[in-house]
Length: 103
View 1: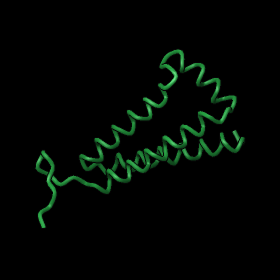
View 2: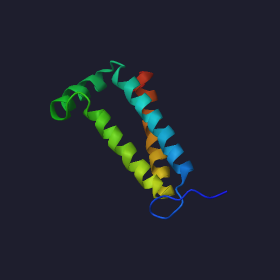
View 3: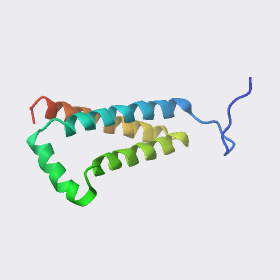
């Protein structure tokens, strides 16, 4: 069976891409849950940033981070995938704190 080769002549790493994609879905899910939580801190932050970036600017930033992580994961960067996993873990803790009213 022939191995898949990308246009650059190297093997793509589907595992890193899959992990980054799943982490990205988790980040968007947490982002939406926090944005719709009605928490006082979140509402103040949305008001401040919506003047500068529009109502969906935070989603655009999240998308840019995901695209960058996917792009570098496609290049075979395990370090970027691990950094994106750490970013997701920090988002998870922050989301839990905000949604459980501990923050």
